[in-house]
Image (tube, rainbow, N blue to C red; front, side, top):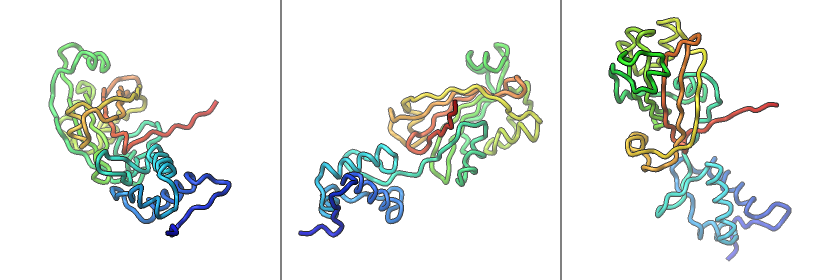
Length: 241
C-alpha cells in the first residue's frame, strides 16, 4: 500500500519533515485537547517507521506543542501564556498577551503573617496584614495560585476593596503607591496536594514557583508566593552582554 503523504529521502531528515507536517496539523487541523493520530496511523499516512514517528512526536512534546498522557495518547497542548520578565500585575500581563484574566478569591482574611513575611514587610511581630489567596485564570483556564500578604499599615482599608480586581491597580489609583520595584526568585517545584487540586493537575506535577516582595519607594507593600502551571505558562528573557 502506498502511503498517501509519503515522505521522501532528501537533505532534510524524515523525522524533521514529519515534525514540520505534524506541527502544521496542530496549527491548522487540530485544536487544543484534540488527539494526535496513533503511531500506526502516522506510519501508514507518511510511509515512515515507528522510530521516525517517535522522534518527531517527541520533539514536539519537548517544544510544548504536544502533551503525552499515559494510557490515553498524545494530544495537542493548550497554548502557553508567555510572559516577559517585567513588573506588572497578572491582569496586565494576560491582557498584553491577548487573554482574558479572571480571578477567584479562595481566602481573604486579616491575620498575623508568618515570621518570614513579618520580616519581608518590615512589620512588628503582632502586626496584622491582609492574607489573600487567589486562583488566576486566563481565558477560563487555570494558570496560577497566588498566596499573598499585604501591608495594612501602609494600605489601610485594602481588605474592604474588590479583591477580584487588580490589587496593583488599586495600589496605584487609590493609594498612589504603585509597586515600582520587586525582588523575585523563580524556581522549579512540585505541586503539593492543595496546589494541584486548585490548578487541576496531579500532585507532584511540575510548576514554577515565584517568591516576590513588592516595594513602593523602598517601602515593602506585598509578599507573595505563586505557583504557575508549567504546561500553560513560560517566561521569556532577553539577554545582552
